Length: 194
View 1: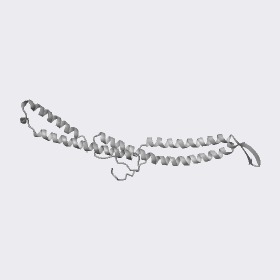
View 2: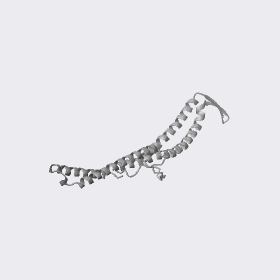
View 3: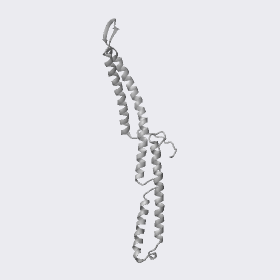
View 4: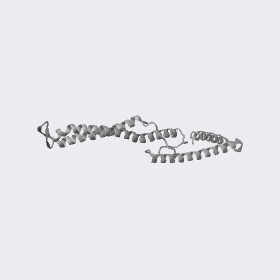
């Protein structure tokens, strides 16, 4: 694998995937904050608290005393953690969507018969193990295609060196047919770029 380091400037490679990824994590954090408020409120309704407020003794459920402060605290923490999670998931999703984008481009090249380059991603990205396996497949396929190309060239050269006079009249049509097949084979293997 090529050891060059790739630095991407654009962190939104697959905007739709990354936006979904960030929204899901942020929603999870929001739901966690909401669950915390509901749970503490429910547990707070089970007990009573006595407090002195403006020189008066007031008895309320614990939830009624702490709910305003609790809501403010959870909102602040949820917003702060949501922002941090959004930034972190952007970088995490970048390490996933970047290699997936590169993989898509490699597959498009392979589909066109281009085996001239490999699947290069940063070693810190996800799919680096898969990249090694794909590169091994590309190298093996390239080696096989080169072998087939060489054999096709050799076959074509040998058939081109033969003339119809080298064969009896009954076999001359077969030579023409073999030369045609060799030409088609040569054309087919030229499709691949190695």
